[in-house]
Image 1: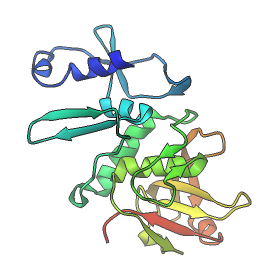
Image 2 (image 1 turned 90 degrees about the horizontal axis):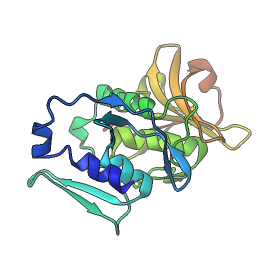
Image 3 (image 1 turned 180 degrees about the horizontal axis):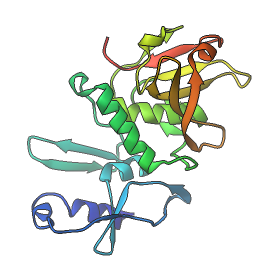
Image 4 (image 1 turned 120 degrees about the horizontal axis):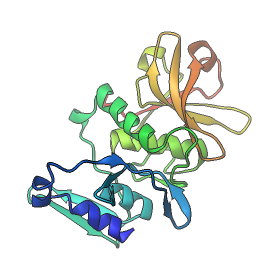
Length: 222
């Protein structure tokens, strides 16, 4: 894993300028962290796998920070991983959809995501498993550390891409992540007890609004 980190750093700074003619393809190799299979956005370049340093930091749990003033990357093995702080100005529905699209490439339907997911954003599922872990991972990828708000019995026009919708069921509750919305239904990504990501689920407006415990978690600014 250390070799992969060093290889990724090799593309920063002056090395990147000398690599303008490099051809990269998506890696087909399988990655494991402590025996658990992981899905990284990895690229095959000149016989090596290149993985984003932040993805490794999140999987292994070490700190990664970037100082824009000095164009420097810092790795801190004594600190836990934390997502980059997302500013309010940079969050739009377009940026949220783009973040979810990147996640879908890394964790397509049927793949296992890091679980339990440890979140530093202070949300309702800070150490989530199953559906709540996946929902929080998606939300953090789109919103960073922006604050959470809960809306009970939300109106349909309050729901936006990236929002979490939860409702009560026989297993105490389920939570899904909105990827798109029409006047009739929402498309979602979600997970079950097997901790596998699923994309493309559909929930009808009339059905959701009849469910007990129907609520919305959003991180868009008011």
